[in-house]
Image 1 (cartoon, rainbow, N blue to C red):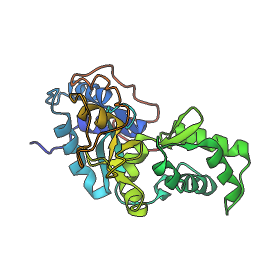
Image 2 (cartoon, one colour):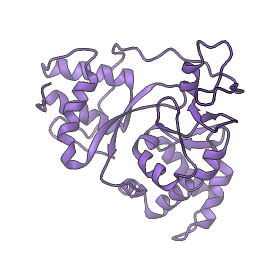
Image 3 (spheres, one colour):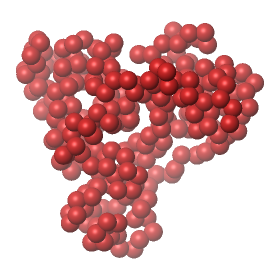
Length: 265
């Protein structure tokens, strides 16, 4: 496999950096467009090989393009993650120290998120943390704005007034979460990745992502736990159509980036 970093690879990295995270079909389209623009060899099923070339050149910078799965719908995502730092301080360039403390306290509700049935924490519980900040207490409206920013920047996801970790956050902070919440977190019994939103066996306690459970039990008339073989009492999630292996619509490059220089939020 060729390991030379071409302008096509650089353009791909630049656009991914500007987006933070990218859904699989969009990444495949970007791969095709970058190869066509810069006359680089292209094969629609070689995206991971293409990314591996980029990752080789990112190693000295302790960064990596990582492939992950959305816990909501099972779709594949690609994100540029920082390997050098294992704590939330990697976000320091985007947020004030006070805002980072609120995020730390939001993540500190991980106990409640993980033991909950759906992997979410209520906005009320998170906003109440604003009164507990040590650096400077935050007004409710200020805290709400920080939460909106965290959602916009794809660190948190919001649904009906409840929050969970976004796919980007899980991909970037998986090792941090596993190290600091090892007594609470589970790995999916099917894909072996960190599972925040999951179904849990009432007998042996193993967990499965909702998309993983949907795929595993799809062909079973009566679902049984893959670990202890006891009856699986949960409603089996419906499986959305899997990502196409062919490109779709192309992402637009954001302002402030060019093939000669990159920046990351």
